Amino acid sequence: MKVEIVRDDGTYSEFILRDTNPAFANAWRRAMKSHVPVLAVDYVDFYMNSSYLYDEILAHRIGLIPLKTNLDRFNLQAECVCNGEGCPSCQVSLRLNVEGPRIVYSGDFVSDDPETKPVFDNIPVIELYDGQQLMLEAVARLGFGGEHAKFQPVSVCTYRVLAGVTITESCSSCQKCIEICPKNVFSAKDGRVIVSDEFSCTLCRDCLKVCEEGAIELSETNDFLFSVESVGQMDVREVAKRALNAIRSKAEEMNSLLEEL
Ligand SMILES: [Zn+2]
Image 1 (spheres, helix red, strand yellow):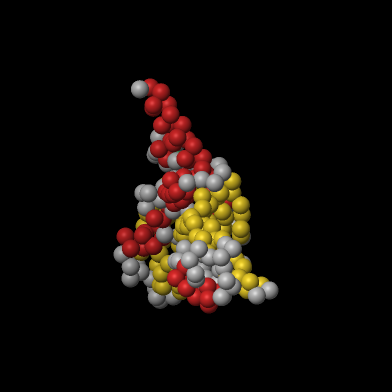
Image 2: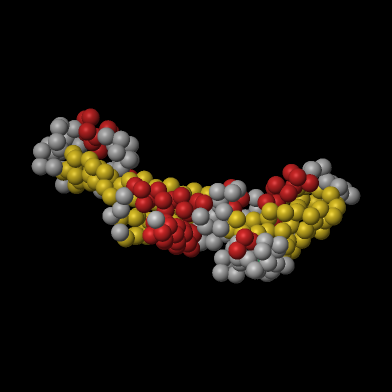
């Protein structure tokens, strides 16, 4: 098994996982979505809210603001020395004290921890009118995507099986496949048909309908092209690595359970 990076700019990555099976590819995809914890606001104390939104609606909006997460510094509350009561090792407070008229943005929150702050400063939270005031403390903790979507580190995490496309000796170079292929997999070179973009093939089999039998062979490979977009709490690479660690620790746990039998 190996991984080839096709494209990676931190928040969006495409990579090929080679020589594996759908079960492992899907386990990795699911682990990235729901077994890598991130920080999100889970509790809000309102000291003053004279805006037109109820506390609950505002708390929900604040919970969905993605926060930069350094997993090396925070514990899950269930595993923390404070036994889940809340301490600087497992939670961070973000304070907001604003008065209208103005639009309140995610960047207006003042965090107790300089490293833990909203990923984007320009997410609108609410518009306050003249005289309206908002004073609150929002408490963020680590959580998993399976618990709530706000704890999900990736907004897109998909894969597809790469196709194997081969042009055989029986190809008469009629070039009909070039015209019909919706993904432009084929092109012409020196009067012959060649496979110029194998990655784009979705195995729709349109080419087989116009081509003489046996000229093009399509197959599913054991390679998977992943497309992953991070919400911004951490880079895709870190999400991918931590997801693999999560799979390994679950497998080890399973092994030890089996040994006990
Ligand atoms: Zn704690």
